[in-house]
Amino acid sequence: MTVGRWALRAASLGAALLVWQGLTSLDVNLWLRFEQFPTVDEVASTFWQRAREDAYWHDLGFSLRRIVSGFALAAVLGIAVGTAIARSRIAEDLIGPLLEVLRPIPAIALVPVAILLFPSNEQGIVFITFAAAFFPVLVSTRHAVRALTPVWEEAVLTMGGGRGRVLFSVVLPGALPGIFGGLSVGIGVSWICVISAEMISGEYGVGYRTWQDYTVVDYPGVFVGMVTIGALGWLTSTAVERAGRRLTRWLPSRDASGPVPSSAAARPRTGRGPRRPSRTPDHAAPAGAAVTGPAGPAGPTGPGSAPETSPERTREVTR
View 1 (cartoon, rainbow, N blue to C red):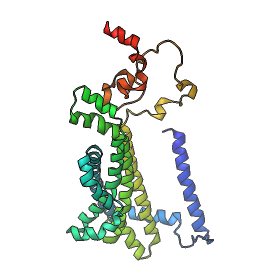
View 2 (view 1 turned 60 degrees about the vertical axis):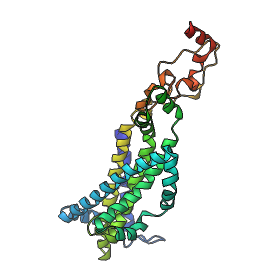
View 3 (view 1 turned 180 degrees about the vertical axis):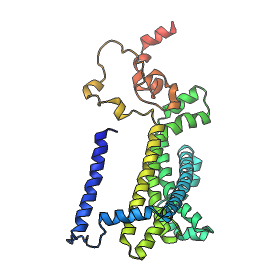
């Protein structure tokens, strides 16, 4: 990212803080009431005071541990179950209806279920975090696997590959962009639900501390909790997106590819002479699907291979 883009983003955050400071310091009371809002100075002062206390970092550690545990469990099971449903008709018939019934239920509504099921509040909060992230990951994985072109799988099977090779060389690498889209959504929903669960039944954590500040009418403390939650959510979402970009480096990058070619440059050739076979694939393919040959991921039957299947070329190969 260039320095100019960093400066633009910093300016956006600075402008929002200036608007907040202006509205609260002037006690603006139009249709929206800002007279009881704490100012930026008060929130910053309270944040600095909390940051020097061990209790603040103790709560931060509890919330992060719950998020990491629940999200990791949801990522593993969501990818596994989503792939199974997309690839197996039996799995779709057995598991699909149950998951479709459970999916519309908000994760925070499962708090009474967690209290009844688990012997400790800690396990119940991790369960709520898991339930919040599981369904976005599952749905994204299912759609990403179903959207894969079957030519890639047929190419691996033609070359003698088994089901395991198809799964780890074609299905999972090809579905990674969709999977990471679900993971990015899931980590955000997990933060929403873990904070809510901590407010309802937690003993420690950022959500529990924010609710305690609200009960004693400590509004600067409430805003410190909100700012902390926002910063943690931003950091974890950025980490997931960076991991996704690193694992899908085979995708065409906008920064690396330069300007988008014009429509005239992308127009197919209409000359009479035979077209030269391209030395580079027309489209990017997953790392494990490199068996498609010079015609790109569409393989020998793709649109880019039409000149190679002409009768003249067939006679040359026969000789």
